[in-house]
Structure formats: C-alpha cells, structure tokens
Length: 456
Ligand SMILES: Cc1ncc(COP(=O)(O)O)c(C=O)c1O
Image 1: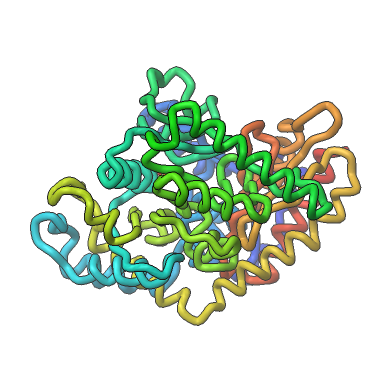
Image 2: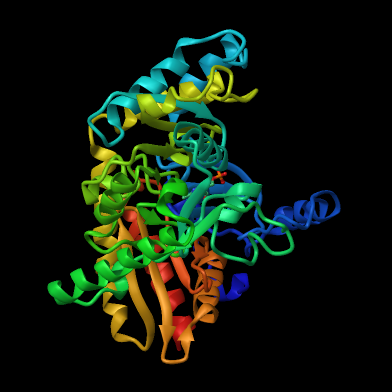
C-alpha cells in the first residue's frame, strides 16, 4: 500500500500528540536508507514484520525515523506490556546503570535479583514453598526448567503439545511444533521430546457434555503418548496456558486441570510456560489462574523485564533445590539493570489497573471483531485479555492469504500488527496493557477496514 492509498492525516500539526500520524508512506525514505544498510550488514536469517526503524516510543505509539507515529499492537511480541518507554522502568534502570551494569550473580550478589525471585515466589500460582532462578531469555528458561525436572526426577523424556512454541535453541526448537521457519534445515533435533494433542476451545462443542467428552479424548491422547515410552520415563510436561505463536489457542475448560492430574499421578513435573501469556497479559497475573491450575514450575520472561532481557524459572523448592550447586547459571543471568526493570514492572502491576486494562482490551476487540464472524472467511475470534486473535479460514481451509493481506494493509496504515498460527492464518493483537482507549479504538478501526478489504 502506498501513501496515496493510506491517506496520511491532513494536517500533522492538528493531530493530538498521542495519535497515529503518517507523514510518509511506510517505510519512509529514511527507513528505506537504513534498510539498505541492514541488507548489507545483517544476516537474511532474521525476518521483519514492518521494515521501519524506530526512533522512540511514546505511550503505545512507536515513532519512526521519518516521524511517522505508529500504533503498537505488537509490544515487541508481548514484551513491552507497560509500554516501550515507561518512565518508571527507565528511571529504575537508569539509576542502576549509574551504579553498576553487571557483576555476574555467580561471582558477587545484588539484592534486586533476590527481590525479583521473592516477588515471583509470592505471585506465581501454587500455594507451596518456592525458589526461583533467573536467566535472560525465554528459551533459556525453558531449557533450564527441563534441566531441573530431569535432575529432580532422573528421567529423560519431555512431553510437549501440538501447536507449541517454546523457542529457537536446539532443545526448545525440538519442543516447538511449527516446522517452517523454526525448525527447517536445522536438524538433527535433540531426542527425548514427545508431542501430545490439545483441546482448543475454539474447536470445542458448545454442549457441555460433548465438550467434556472432547477434553477427555484429548487427555486420553496424552496418556497414549506417555504410554509410548512409559509414563515413568517422563521428567516434564511443558504447556503454554494460552498458546502463543501457535495461534493464540485457549484450552477448553478442564484440559489444563486434566494435565495437572495426569502429571501428578505419574510423578511428572508440570511446567507451565507463561513466557508470553504471563505478567498480566491475559487480565490475570498468570494465565493459568484462569484454569485454577498451578504448575510445579512456572516460567516467566518477555514482559517480566519490560524489554530488558530477563527470564525466570519459579518452582517447588524441592525441585529447584534438587540441582547440584553450580549446576545452574549463566554469565548474564538476572542482569541487575533487567532486575530493576522487573521491579518497576511489579510496582506498575500493583494496583490492578493494567490487569483491568487487559480485560478492557478483550472487550473492545470482541465488540469490534465478533460481528465479522458472520463473514465467510473469518473462522474465530479468540484469546484472553490483551492476547486476542482473529483467525481466517473457510471451506477451502486456513486462509493465510487473508491474514497476510489484512496485516500488511494495517501495517502500511501505521497499525503494527503480527500474524501467527501453524498455518499463518491468524492475526494477533498484543497491545500494551495501558493503551489509551482512543488509540486502541483507532487501531482497531484501521484493522477492521484492513480485514474487510482483504476479505472482499
Ligand atoms: C510461550 C513461549 N515460550 C518461549 C518463548 C521463547 O522466548 P525467547 O524468544 O525469549 O527465547 C516464547 C517466545 O515467543 C514464547 O512465546
């Protein structure tokens, strides 16, 4: 789409400060120049959703190097839930930068690391004694959860699920379901990873008895996979409480509780991967709260550090302490600047307004897009809180073409929108939790027009 079709705002000076504004087509001339440099110096192995270069963030808008103001429905893939330029995060992180940037927690210690662990022990689901280990990335948290579960159980195998996404490192790539782009040509993948079925809520029968039967079938399928190698060989079962990259898939009521029961019965460590869905994203602090389920281990990352790399493995004290001293760690694990950012995030979550914001986003997204279900081509509107998605499909199957065209049109119009799903046929919305209502509304209106255009 070009500037001519996007219709940039008529008079930039008249546009309120906190509003979308396009002064060039996207990408603009300066972004194009920088993109040419990128092509010369950066590997082609990194994709990009919208090739604009960002100068700064303001509230829930990203301002690019051509002074375009873009509505952020991506939050850096569910990371900047408190906004990408939150003053409290900046203040705490800047103060820490002035004190020291790094010591390595395995060399000398600092109290912010301990404070982050304390908060996670107190706030993650599960009324039991907990300990936490901090790392840097989500994949690193997943890898370490598996290490801990193996060490505690002395069992090798790991169960994961259809549509799962757990990262791009060797083990987490094997745990991730989607072949292209995540696993393609990167084999051989590590073994000892088994995949079980799920019970997606958007495919569940409406009738409660039939829905219970549908969940029971999926759980029986899980038992069948465990039986392949013997349930006593499984160290961990790793599940996303709302699946992220796989398409914002909410599990049918009873499925996570069923996994909890199976894991307990077989002595398998239930690892709940809250890396994308946690830290308030779904309108609860942790998404597994919606299901009344507590993992033996809960994983956090992404929004935990508000953009500074920080991840956490929080679990039952006896599991977390089963690892031999020195068995866990990493040079940058729990970096002090990132820990200060997390402490700022905890402060910002304190009064519940961000959680309420997430719930408000769900209501606004449903009100805007559920009427589109009447159109052939819109298959479902799903998700929880500020983790909402629109799925495209019709009798011919998944419609990745519609998702792609609609997302491209929204992006060109200055509403940063991501796709996801095993078939690439899902548009997902991940706005900052405190997005201004008028900005949310404008972004949704632009996206609705883009979807209607792609469907016609
Ligand atoms: C559920 C889940 N687990 C793990 C990861 C991997 O996190 P990272 O990209 O920080 O390694 C992601 C990232 O999208 C995720 O959504």
